[in-house]
Amino acid sequence: MTEKKSKEADLYHPIQKHFTKLGYKVNGEVKDCDLTAVKGEELIIVELKLSLTIDLLIQAAKRQRLTELVYIAIPKPKRTRSRRWNDICHLVKRLEVGLITVALTTRPKVEFVTHPKQFDRKKVMSYSKRKRIALIKEIEGRSADYNTGGSNKKKIMTAYKESCIQIACCLDVLGSMSPKALKQIGTGDKTSSILQKNYYKWFERVQRGVYQISEKGKKELADYPELVQYYTEKLKGGKDRG
Image (cartoon, rainbow, N blue to C red):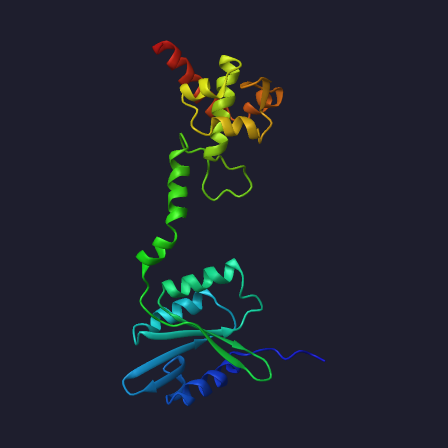
């Protein structure tokens, strides 16, 4: 048995019934608007699509020239507990557009996911305060820009990795050292943790509290010539000043 293919018109009747029950006068296809609902001075416009697309959002934005109460309606997705769905809902809220989903079952169910209302950017930013702090911290932890934006197949240079490279350069140039001695020449507060965890296997403990660069570390430093040169020259500069 062939499954019936959904049409935009399948979304219309459940939404029409919903607004009619609430006392609105509902019409379809009025001046290019898929659905209009009017009650007193209140005008609601709903645009119907089988998927949420850029074209649908553009259409909704155009309708906002006519009324603040604009909704987009799509069939209810199978997955509504996902990061992508949360991102979609955030975007719709950001555009101050309402979102309706319709479960196209034997008895279609209309669900209002968001309503069109003014977006409070400051309130949303306050929820992401920790992420902002982490982002600034990561930026400040990088000595320069060693990544190309948009690259997805290249290894990303992070502040953590750069710290590992800095420590490895110090050990390579100056020989075995303690975390305290390394911190004194500017390797940062995470030095002890980096040496102990040894995530990249670049370090070896030669005695209690003293580390040296491993053969693997020496070999892999060659993959980062710009940073090696930067930190090596920085060390030499420190020596010269001393």
